[in-house]
Length: 429
Image (cartoon, rainbow, N blue to C red; front, top):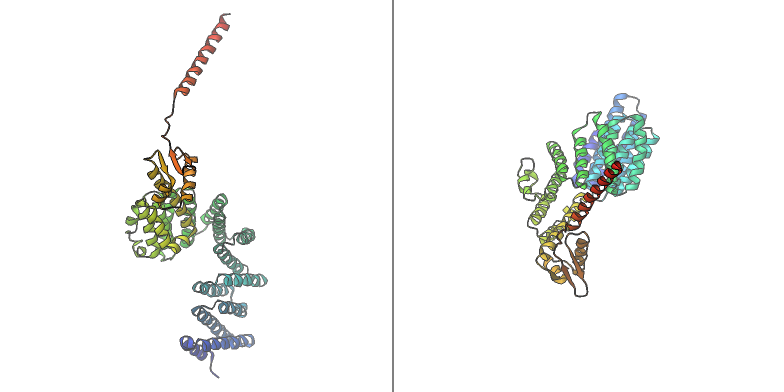
């Protein structure tokens, strides 16, 4: 009978040519090593058996990852429990993190990941593996946040915070408060999002904060400042994040760079986008499609061209719509650009047809009419919509008449003089 090492080598050779047979061999190794490790009394044999089992688990998981088989990978994680029960807790946590990371390469596997994590959280609770449970719950909350399951995420976060405050684990507490901030921001509750971020920073200040966690805190700070329209401060946070992540070759640095470009556009400095992309750290990202999309938006904004802006939104739909931060700010920018274009068109006229205005900006009549109505109510310009004639009547901006104010001021002074004279007559009398 072939040894376990021979079977591992044979399975590795068959991975590309005959994955089905390789899968069978890995399962055979897992079954044989599981029975050996249970019955073995010799420590050396047991350790070798556990090493073989771990290698077989990882190789089988890699096989399913390459085949994009999420359910197969989920089964491997369930199979690994017998191995995890007989090994050190630190090694267990590392193995399960490795296996879960393989899901990242499998498209449309989010729900499978959520199910696997929920199942393993229950198992770790039964086995009293508290730290493993916490790390799995943090991962589950991240997935629920991605899936927009905000209510479930908040329920899980509340339970986690109660446990972590008893344990006083500052590192995990920082991560959970950061997730809480992101969830509240997703809901739209900015005040609670800021409070959670403050709690995360407070916890982080009392420990050594790893660079990737510090970058995540800075990124969230930038996002919240951008929500408050404080794009200058937001830009400085995004720049810190970009520098930090670039030095670690973190793929998330691309998002920070996109947000930096967005801030420049929102600050009405689109011409700075080109110079920003020429700095040393940004050069390697300059030709990526995500950056090209932001460059197209900046150019359209610089030219105040609404049709170019809409074309950029269509051409780079996935890049610009997949990120909620960029999507929300570009919606506000589009609204501002439309308003500027409408003002530019109606300013020379005292009466102008709505159809003509709609044709000039390339929008539907109903949309233009609604926007003009909103602008009149917001006192962007003075005018009235004559729907009977289908036109906009623009009034000259009324100059403030100070006559009434001056008259009231004069009367107030006269009143003071009269009161003063009355006081003097009382004294004389």
